[in-house]
Image 1 (spheres, rainbow, N blue to C red):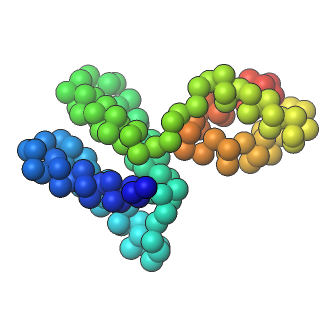
Image 2 (image 1 turned 45 degrees about the vertical axis):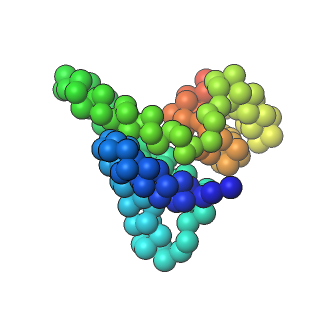
Length: 148
């Protein structure tokens, strides 16, 4: 199975041949971010590491979308949403809210959490299971509801 970097290289080649400027730009940006991380840390990134980079980029895009909406720049919102859609194809399937709720229930029981002061322990147990597969804000919100 090809790695994320291999898939990106192939996508760049095919989009260049097809004249798809958006896909080419998105794939170049992502590959540059992955390579930058490799150079900074002097390691070869695994797919899991690359997905962490993608997750960071997704958060940045979501923040940009929020800011552009507040500023009334729908043209820029559309561009950022297109990039989010592009990035999502390299992430594992996202968990539904019900699935996250079940994991929150499990983590609360596992850590024997009694109230809001135990939120850190619950999150510590929960995050490795949902990393890259669920939005951290949603997870945090569900844990607060459960403990509060």
